[in-house]
Image 1 (tube, rainbow, N blue to C red):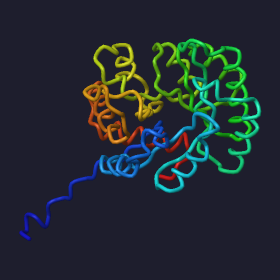
Image 2: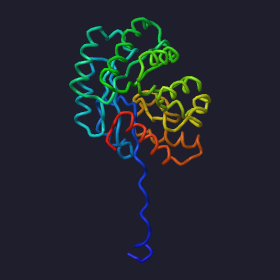
Image 3: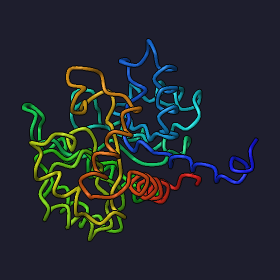
Image 4: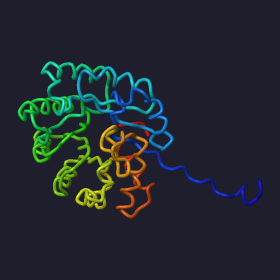
Amino acid sequence: MSALTAHRPARAARPLLIDSHSHVDVSEFDADRAQVLARARAAGVSRQVVPAIALVGFDQLRDVCRDESGLYPAYGLHPMYLADHRPEHLDALRAWIERERPVAVGECGLDFFVDGLDAETQRFYFRNQLELARDFDLPVILHARRALDEVIAALRGIGNARGVVHSFSGSEEQARQLWKLGFCIGLGGPVTYERARRLRGIAATMPLEFLLLETDSPDQPLLGHQGRRNEPALLREVCECIAALRGVAGEEIASATTRNAERLFQLPA
């Protein structure tokens, strides 16, 4: 080793990333889940928050998160799977939360975009899950599609709620209302498309302390990956896209969003 080499400072490692919303437990990953998780770790995605969608999948979700390091489960009843839910599932959800101690309640919320999802039934499950999150002092992972105003009103009504609206698609004013409530917004694949001008404007200017990164794997593929299954390894591309929009280094976005996820979900640093 030369004297020059001996005194050359080591290159700093890239900051690790947290995928704040990945459904890596679902059947689309059954054939190659180990390889998907290995690719994620190789890309610096060291941890993932994995939200449930229906009671029938809770066992699989728990087992996947137990078997692989860096996966943190959340349990909830997703509004798009309304046909799978029963009122007694809320009691089962309470028991799961009490026994398993997840990092959040979710995925839950409201979806007024998909036809055939009864609005009042959605509200019933949403209100009850907000109450569960309050009772267990847990954050909520929220799905809100064409329903943001009502979701924000519900959060104000329950009081002292915290969490994230994942795959945020609302206006800057709606985002601002969420920040005032202390809520984060999750951004993923959609922000990589140039046509998403409003979303990219929010990503470029929003307070960094409320930003979380996500993939929503296997859904919402990034620009350049259309028609393919999304996976957590691509979170680095989301990070670099937002960094470019803000005119900063990717490391700054990675470090800030990792701290945000650790704080919200009380993950070990």
